[in-house]
Length: 311
Ligand code: G3H
Ligand code: 13P
Ligand code: ZN
Image (cartoon, rainbow, N blue to C red; front, side, top):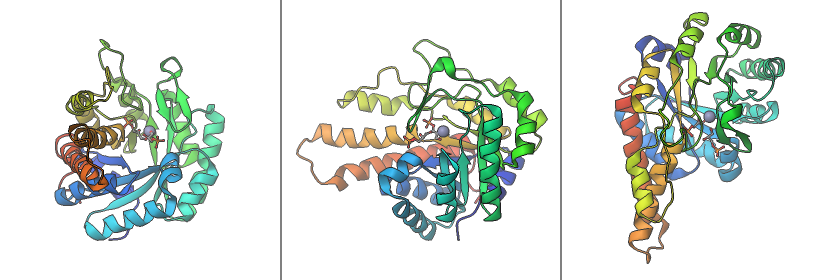
């Protein structure tokens, strides 16, 4: 099956009360772990690639790896640019085989965000590619953009209709208290998401797919393994999975997961190398990281997103 856009995936997810996992891909083993899990569970997935991933692994290598995943797994797969920083990067991905792009103008003021998002939509739609944009700002770090907790801003519901109308975007990422990375809440702080804001947004944008970034739950199992094997992730804390389940049942159709994959992969590699310092065949530790990624994605699809059997 060729790559698909997210249009059909989101329509079904919205109607069915589940969400599609958008998993970040940076190398072959991460991709294999994700794709094998989704393939076995007959789940649609979004494979997303950031500016940093393109710089690390090279656009062509990533596209060809995703093409291999399509051949190996009979499921709908969308290839998405995560946090596209500008029109040029979005255009390179649209021209280079992606079926979906995010233009992230969330750090601009409203008018500039509208302008840059609209420009990407016009080009993308002329090529049959769909566009995600973002209103509001998450805390955390992605590529070279760093947003402190103090600067993070929830999405203002009274802006969403105008933004979607004027830009023509196909989905909207919102800020309701999630954040990027492995340290989402301070120690002792009660994790909270603003479902009231999500509800307000949904009222203003009926039947419109919403995207949740920064949605890793930071499994304490992997944190423990990393800690016990020479790592330091003290105080890493993520979004509780019951909140993600609640989001998946709502208008949230795409849930972004990257940090959880990194933790799963790193826990496997650390465990092998810490236990046996004589290991020097990369396959010996990467295969354990890859197996962890597969276990994690299986869990997310079945127990959190609810997308199993929806391919
Ligand atoms: O939201 C950001 C993603 O986790 C991508 O991270 O820019 O380090 O590849 P990256
Ligand atoms: P996490 O850091 O919570 O995995 O978020 C990933 C993300 O939003 C990618 O765009
Ligand atoms: Zn993100």
